[in-house]
Image (cartoon, rainbow, N blue to C red; front, side, top):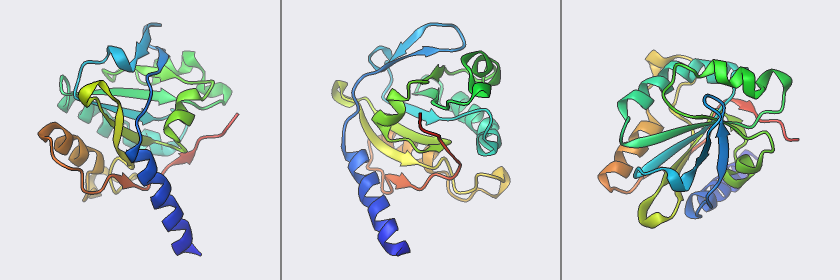
Length: 185
């Protein structure tokens, strides 16, 4: 049974990676401005579905902050919160990621979450912007150890971003994300 579920997951994930994403716009809770994919001018966009209530997101906060700094001017990061709980309000969102130099977007209608097929928090989708099209080239986990940063052996997102920037094929375009489930409306 586990093998069948794994096969279904891999087929679904590989279909997502193969398909393009249409442009969207969301409000940045940090400054109230609208952010759209079409206004981003970088070779890649790291779209990270996150929250500030899930412990897994809090484990990753410093690692993501370091990646945003390291890839500044190369990869645009977008943090998206699609959670419906009252404590995940736009006002609370503005406080949580204020020290990270990337937009924190409210997707309370869950339109963008459905567009990407996001199910977990945190879950990342690396989007290539080549030829003016938005194609997911990697999706899933940030690395192989959500709880202990010092014990990370594989940096899935970092490796995918390096390959994208080098124009190389990403060998493992999906990795199962670990985290909290995003509750549907």
